[in-house]
Image (cartoon, rainbow, N blue to C red; front, top):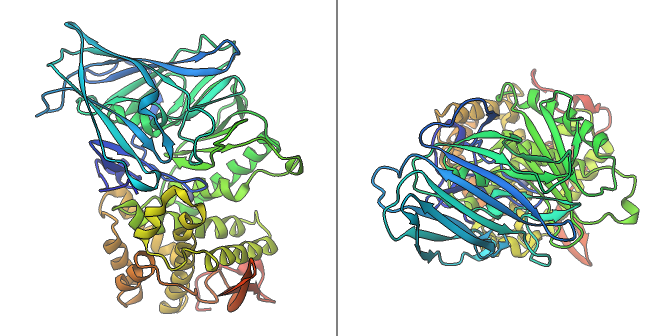
Length: 539
Ligand SMILES: [Zn+2]
C-alpha cells in the first residue's frame, strides 16, 4: 500500500496513518475501514492574523446550469518562503489516491503568480502503484519565486462510473459537494508554511448553505503544512445538520442526500456510542470534537465508510425499498469512530493494517455489546458472521504482501487482515488473562501502550508491539505476530476469546457449496452478558 515509511513529526501525527510519499503525508483508508489519520491538523476558530509563513486558501464550489456542483475553484496565497535547503517551489497532486483515478488531470487552469508574473513549471510523475494506492504528479518551478505567491486552479468533480473505493473524490449530490482534500487538491510541498487558514466562498449556493471540513465549520485554522488540508473531509451546500446549528455540541453530523433511516436519530445513537468509547478507551481525555459526514450519491462509485482524523465519511448510493425505515449501519459507525482511539503501528501500511483494522474490528464487535447497545444474540451472530467471512476468505492464508498487491481490486481479499487481526486480539485477550490468572486483560495492556504512543515515548512498530506482549505474557511474541499477520498463517482463537458468556469451537463451516474448517460461537448458559468481560479476581 501507499503507506511507505511512517512519518513522525510531533506527537499529534504519531498515531496517524501518515505515509510519506514524495514529501507529502497521506492517510489511506478503506471502504468500511478507516484510518485514524493523525490529527495533523487542529482546528480552531480564527480570530488572529495568520503567521508569517502560512497558507491562506479559499474554496468556492461552482454550480453548473442545472444547479449541480461541477468544480471547486481554489484561490490561495502562500506566505513566507521555501524550507531550508529548497531552491525551487514544488507542488504535488495525486494522480491516483486510493482508487480515485485521474485527480491531477481534473486540476484545470492552474496559475501560479508572484510579483514577477506567472511561474512556469516542469512536470514529473511517480510510477504507478498497484492496488489503487496513491502516486503523484510533481510540478517544479522553472525559476526562483518571490513570496507571497498566489496559486489558483479549478478542480472538477470526480465523474460518475469510476471504480469503487473510499469517498475521497469530490462528488456532487443534492445541490452540494463532498469528498476529501486528497481528492482534488494540488499543494505546495516544500514551503515553510506551518499553518493554513481555510475559508469558504459559498455565494453560488442559496442562503443557509454550510461549508465544513474535518477541521471545523466555516473559517478555520489548520496547523501543519499545506498538505495537511488534504487529510480532511469536506462538505458544502444545503446540508442537513445534527444537532441544529444553534446547539452547542462536541459531536456534529452533516449530510447531503436522502437516507433510508432517520439521520438525526441515528446520530443520537452514534453520539452516545462516541461518548461511551471516550470513557472506555480513556487515553484521549477529553476526546476531541468529532464530525460525521454522510452523503448519498445517485451514481456510482457510491463509496463506503472511511475515517480520517476525528471524523469519518459514510458514502452510499440510493436507498433500496427494503431498507426504508431501518437503522443506519451502526456497526460501521462504531468501527469508524473506534479507529481514532486504535490508531496504527508505524511502518508500511500493508504490513501493519492487521493492527489498525484488526483491533478496530475486534472492538467494533465487542465494545457496543459491552456497552449494552447490542444484544447477546446479535453479538453471537456477529461473531459467527466474522468467522464465516474469515475462514471462507480466499485470502485467509495469504501473506500481507500478496493482499497488498491486490489492494482495492477485491474487497474480500482486502478485508482478510481485518478478520484475522480481530481473531488475533480476541485470542490475545484470552492469553493475557490466562498468563495473569485473570488479573490482566487486553484492554489494560492497550491502555498503557496507547498512552505511551500518545505521549511520544514509544514508536509503536511491529517489534515494539511484540515486545509489549512478550513482556505481558512472559513469552516471545514476535515470531507469532509475523507468522500470522505477515506470512498469513491461519488462527483459531481461544474459545473464551470473546468473553465468558460465549464459547467458540472448531467447526466445519459451509459457504457457497464448499466446506471450511472454522469456528462456531455459541452462548454459555449461566453467564450474564454484563459479566461476559468482567475482570479482576481469577475467573
Ligand atoms: Zn477500518
